[in-house]
Amino acid sequence: MNARDIMVVTSENIAGKEIVEVKGLVRGNTIRSRHIGKDIGAVFKNIVGGEITEYTKMLAESREQALDRMREEAAALGANAVIMTRFSTSSMMQNAAELLVYGTAVVVK
Image 1 (tube, one colour):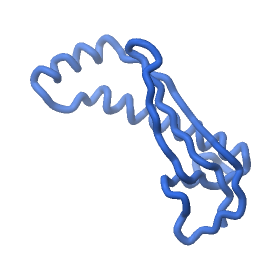
Image 2 (tube, one colour; image 1 turned 90 degrees about the vertical axis):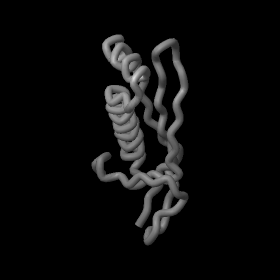
Image 3 (cartoon, rainbow, N blue to C red; image 1 turned 120 degrees about the horizontal axis):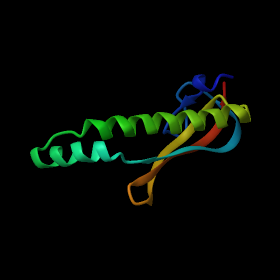
């Protein structure tokens, strides 16, 4: 199965599907650091207010990369879905953070 075709949900069940096998825990992560150029823009946005679009884009890319890595791990186990998906973040060092996504790989029919 192509990793991109793996269904990912936050619920413990998928409506209309039956879980026939549990493959186990799968996860994907990425660690990103801030960029000095983006920090300068963020300082100005902090003064005048508004969305810091550079960081919004960076976080969206990080989420997608972590999800892709989790899907690849699920595909390697022979799963076609991931249930109970959760996101977590943690600080790794000054100006760097980890984004982790994890869930339970399953086979549904």
